[in-house]
Length: 410
Image 1 (cartoon, rainbow, N blue to C red):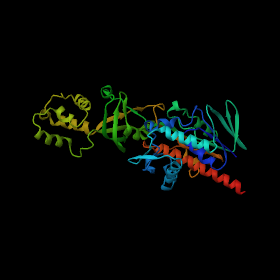
Image 2: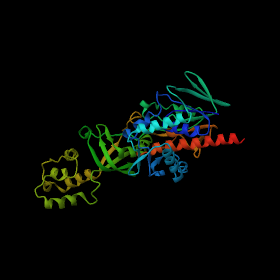
Image 3: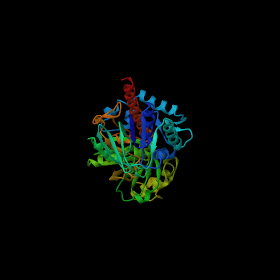
Image 4: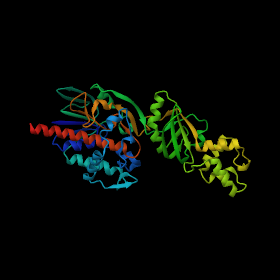
């Protein structure tokens, strides 16, 4: 039996390796000149390929109850066993897994090498134009029409189009009557309309960030934030971006609230009042510069029309209150987001209710498998999206092997 895998990225390569173990004739069709191009960009070129904290609350989907069925300890072990058998030695940092080489190319080359050793054929610079089914799958490219018994869609999403992710897989899936949950950028920067953003461009700070939707707390994160001339970026913003963007698309009011002093659990006014007792005649800027990036201090003082040379004791109580509010609950309205070209992944995709989640086989079309970023699953930063790509591919490969065993038995 012939298996065609459309897409030679993270999930496509693993599915090919897994399916080839069954003795099937497996071919990858990859539109780039090499497989795994996007893998090289992950983890800032180091490839954070897994995370020990492999739990359902690290993922987003319209159908989390369905996804919950496969995010478990047994499947976590399948991923770890796969990479161990691939020869990857992990470097673990706070639960994050990187190849010990600290190079993403180690993961890419190991997968490509293993696929070739398993007899997988890899055809590059091939773009699939259409897929139809008439007793078998007919896969049309500009060069030829290929016939297959099994097709695996592993084309990736629309995120980072420079790596070849152009959304083709969604079109191919709709050929078989699959419903596509609205596809949006995720793990991406957010935009605002504050008037002074040019002044905070490129400032970084460790903060606590809370996301509010229609004035209701939705989620909070602690980590580094990066301010830009159009809004906010950084890991903690990426973690909130999927929910914020979906809210904006549904005409919800989205707002983030920044605490620049997450280490301070008490009232800032009380803290500074006590501090000034030991530090007489200190300017407000002197007090705050010892706690924060001086650029943030200057920005917030300017926002409140407070001269940085003003003595702390000369501030009115109302000035102290507003200063404390901005330093511990600084509000940033979210008005937009960057596009697919800046996004690490996408939210939305092929609806999970139309997939046998245990096998990744389509419930609309027998012998059609849909895996990886094409599905309505997006994870947080930290190796979760790659983890799902590997897992969905392994589950598909397992089921393809079962079909081969069944054929041999019959």
